[in-house]
Image (cartoon, rainbow, N blue to C red; front, side, top):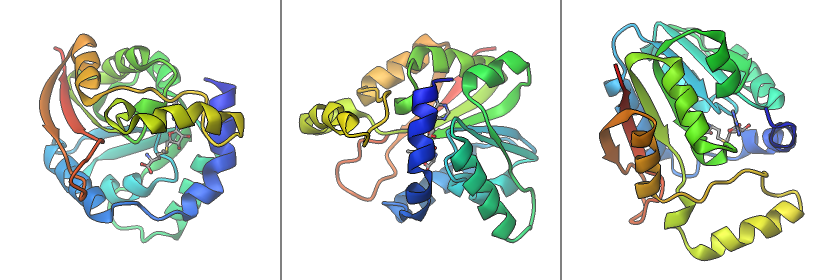
Length: 214
Ligand SMILES: C[S@@+](CC[C@H](N)C(=O)[O-])C[C@H]1O[C@@H](n2cnc3c(N)ncnc32)[C@H](O)[C@@H]1O
C-alpha cells in the first residue's frame, strides 16, 4: 500500500464526505445499471469505496458486500454513515485494504466494483491483474472512472502543480477510454458493455462492465 496515497486520502476524507455527488442523475443511472448486471445472491467486493456512498445504496442487491479503501479515515466515515443508515436488507462491511492485499488473501468474489477508483491506483495493469485474481472464473468487473486523457489537456498540466500544494494524490493515471478498455482486455477480461451515464454532453467517465476469463 502506498503510504503517501493513504495519507492524502485520509486528509481529504472529511471534506470529501461533505461534498455532494457531482451528477446525482448519472450516479443513479450507474447504480441502477450495476444492480441489473449483478448476478443473484452475489458476493461483491468494492474497491476504493470512499465514504461508502455507493456501498450503502447497493448492498441490498448482494448476498455479501465488502467495501474497501486504502484510507482508514474514509472507512471510518463509511462506518459512521452505515451506523446512521436504516438497516433494511444486507448491510455492507467496510475494511481498509487495497486490491493487492485482498488478492493475497485468496477469497474470490462474484463481482468487483470500482467507482472513481481505477485512475488513482499507482499501477493500473497490476490492479487489473489483482482484480482478475479476486474474481471467480467468469466473474464481473464494473468500473466507472475519469479518463484524464479524454479531458482538456490543461487538467493534466494542473495536476502536478496541485500535487506540489498537496491538492492532488501522487497517483493519477491519464488514460483515455480506449486505453483503459485495452488495459482491461490485456488483463484477460472480455468487455460486455461500455456506456456513458453522465448528464453532460461530454462524459469522460466510461461505465465499463467486463467478464473475467474462465
Ligand atoms: C475519488 S474517491 C472515490 C470514492 C468513491 N468510490 C466514490 O465514488 O465516491 C477515490 C477513493 O479511492 C481511494 N483510493 C485511492 N487509491 C487507492 C488504492 N490504491 N486502493 C484502494 N483505494 C484507493 C481513496 O482513498 C478514495 O476514497
